[in-house]
Image (cartoon, rainbow, N blue to C red; front, side):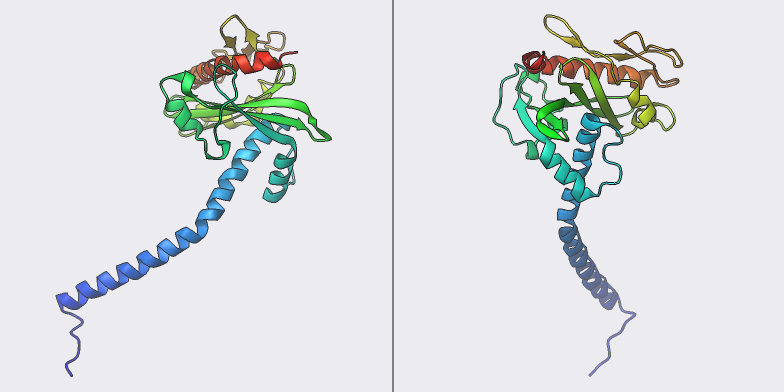
Amino acid sequence: MSKLNRNSNGYIFGYAIILTLVCGTLLAFVSEGLKDRQKAAVLVEKQKFILKAGLGANSLDGLSGQQITELYDKVVKVDMVNSKGEKVDADEAKLSIFKEYKKKDVTTRSLPVYVVGKKDNPTEVESYVLPTYGNGLWDNVWAYIAIDGDAETIEGIVFDHKGETPGLGARITDAEIQNRFVNKKLAYSDNAIDAPDFQKGEGTNYDDEPQKVDGMSGATITGVGVNDMLDAYMTLYRPYLVSKKK
């Protein structure tokens, strides 16, 4: 029996095919095995955003992923509405805020409202957490904004982004920046809601001005994108919020 010529093109080509098939099969197996874990991690991350906005930045300190989910299931219920404030038949678990945002006709968007109850009495509303989506300087930005049970006062907000500049626009993820929105007010008009706006520049005290938020130096365009995003989505949610206004 002749020995295989390991230096032949045929041997090398065949070896490469077998190795590719084996590695591809192993990678597919590992990927499939991790899929459920990845989905669970994404879900917990969303639950963190909602609970931090609705209950406070430090409300999840020391909690494991499982405990976060247990708290979420205890205090959060979801209303699915449209821009008229009407309930719609949509599966929140399968909803993509990004895909809804891409719909040109805003009246066709499904809008989730995360009704957060108090920790000691989940039947009493702590806040309405509203997801928003928009554009920053380089890419998309988004937020979960918590409106008090009075449907007017901001209790908290959590921002995130896809590609803002580190040290500038990316500062929207800093707790200190987000805390600047706490206790600011929504301003209702006949057909819209004006959310508090980042101001140009930084270092001004706006404690007595409920519609103004101290800005971020060097991140004017990101701030404008955030302002536009919040105004657009608060207006979409206006009919729902009006129905809850005390």
